Image (cartoon, rainbow, N blue to C red; front, side):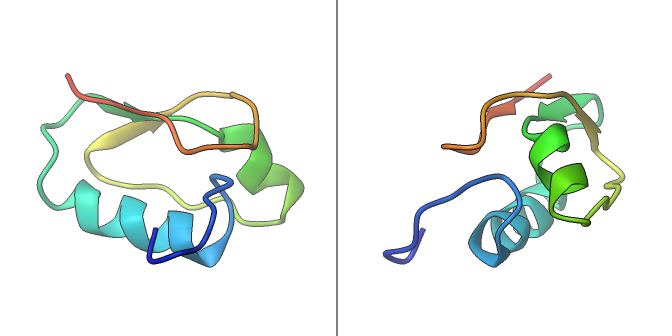
Length: 63
């Protein structure tokens, strides 16, 4: 994103999740919850539920 790799926990990932949370339907899913926990970042979003996944990308599933 913007030339930065996404890990699910870095600032590029969190910015993208924040933007998408505003437009994704309720019940959508965002991966890399384990990556955010490991990084000490455990946010919650109104339209996303979270699941664990590898930390080398950002996984988004719409409802």
